[in-house]
Length: 63
Image (cartoon, rainbow, N blue to C red; front, side):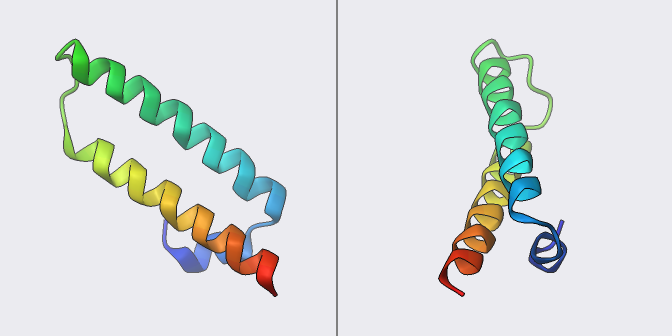
């Protein structure tokens, strides 16, 4: 998703989405250790999505 789409979401939705992505990231890291992860780029992409969400959350708090 793009940051614009996250800006349209409510604060609770953003927190829920962030928690969901953090769980997904944990699972991917576990798969990476056991070498069952097919696409290692997905870890980086997930980290960036989390960062986008946190940025939008902080922007909404400062307004």
